[in-house]
Length: 311
Image (cartoon, rainbow, N blue to C red; front, side, top):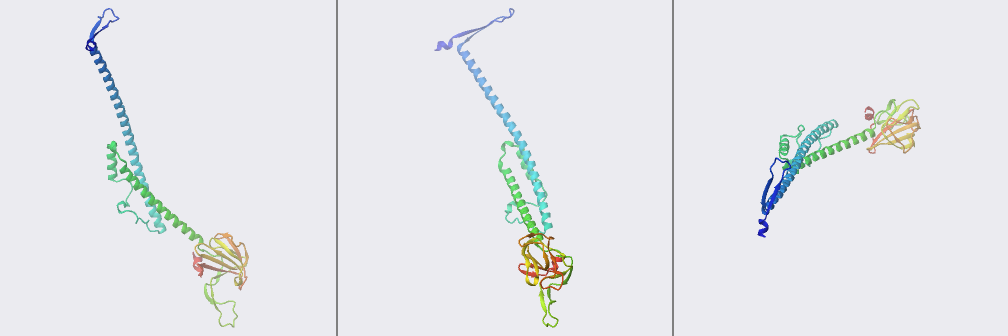
């Protein structure tokens, strides 16, 4: 075996040009094997270094992309905070116009109380993001996750406040549509709400005072009688002393009555709107002349319609 490694191999290089000398080298087999092994090791080392350089390039590209994403995220968070602050200001203005109290934030943890100052990130936010940009390899999701959770919480608060405002506006709309407003006919009041001397009692009757639960508004025969609020016709028929009576049930406990009509323009169960013609004036029932007997009820009790004429 020793003789094998001590064998010598002669390498001869003969140039093609005649003026160049030939080259000859006599090398042992061991030296040739060691040279080949060294070359293979060097090649492997170059390949490993090349792979590491490629990984470094990819890591550098990832870090550059991460920096860009962080910068974009920081700008987006700043815009989101500014928009939320603008929404808070608008929310406060709308609440002030509607005379609503500030949105309750009693359930918010004390450590999470949000300042009512102007929008945008503070110095601490900018310092944190600058540190993240300088050391992208050490970025963790925890700081950004906390900021995003804060933005989500603020968004939920704004949504809750807007829902409260929407509910209030819906209730105001219902109240506006259900509350009687205006005159049923453009006439003159001939008898007010409250106790009065009965116009139907004989002159020699001593006790002629009675409670008048509405207003008598006189006008020419056949004058259109209009509903003073949105509602449903619950009665459109002859009703004793009321004569031909139209009764409307409105929302939120309101009802209106229109008596002594000469004719109807609606049917029971029909839905009507404020200003719609429902009947015509007449003198049916217990009446002394052409007029409408107008009553306003709230929660089953007659109230003075005069204040609704002024609205």
